[in-house]
Structure formats: C-alpha cells, structure tokens
Image (cartoon, rainbow, N blue to C red; front, side, top):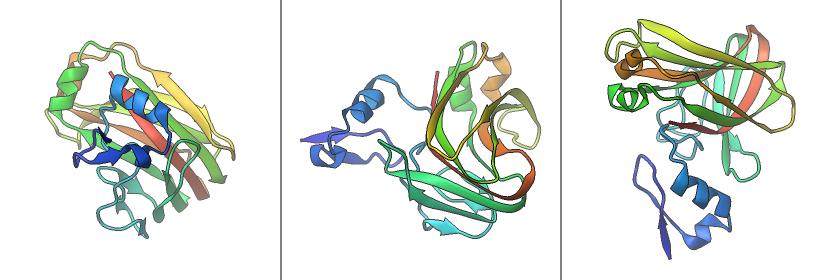
Length: 193
C-alpha cells in the first residue's frame, strides 16, 4: 500500500515506511503544513555545514555549524544549529502566493526544541514583507518567547488575525538570545492557517 505524503518533491511513503506512525498520517491528512520540509527530511547539498546558508530544503541557518541529527519521538530528524558568538537562527521564507492565503486569518504554529548548550530562550518570530516579496524591508508581526530545557518539548502558539500586508510574503524565524557557544535543536516545525 502506498500513502501519498505532501512534500516539495511529491514523495510517496509505503505503509512499511510509516512504521506504525499513525499520528503522522492523521496529522498530514487533516492539518496541512504550509511550510516546506518542517521535519527536516530533505538536505539537497549534504547533511552538515560549517557556515551560514541553506541546510535542509528551504531552511536557512545562521550558524557556524548546522547539521541533521536524530529527532524527538515521532520524528526521524531534527536540525542542530551551533554558533560560537552571536545569535544562531533558522528561518523559512514564503512568497505572496502563501501570504495571500493567510490574510485575515489566525495561524497556529508548533515545533519541538531542546537546548544542547547555553540556550535558555528561543523566540518564534513571524514577519511580513513591506512590499511584495521584498525580504530586505520587513515588519515583525509577532515575537513569541519560549524558555527551553535540555529535554525535547513541544511548543505551540497562535497569532492574532493577520493583516492584509501579509499578502506581500514573509518568513518565520526561530532564534536565541545573543550569547556564546550556543547549540540548540529544533524539529517538526508546522505552520497552519
């Protein structure tokens, strides 16, 4: 039996590959993720990098090192970001096509995260472009701050009703407070309208 799984590459999973993960199947069918590869399964250029740039498909990382690691329960992979000095972060941009779907709606996001070293706070930032798909000029819609621990935990949040300007596109970003020798892992990022 083949189950169609929504991914940017149109991949399919066999029943055996689901490995009894019925929660994943139900979630994929009833709660679509508007982000691409929120499970960090696809790494087109490799699975470990030593500078800022793209790691998993469509996810940009600002880190001295970022790599694919084993994820929490019900997740095969997670995304690890390490930075010696400054603010490590990862984000995914979305264009006007997605932004148009969000106008006048609330969004719900969820993710799993854990501290590996020197990270106490992880912020979820949701941003809109001021003009169509111009990512250099943006306005923050919300910053939600979370205290994270050394154990995997799930975090969720909901926005207020999104403004019409979200139709210009924007991005979701996850970042830490400024510090030194910071390492954190994040997994199963989901953004639902």
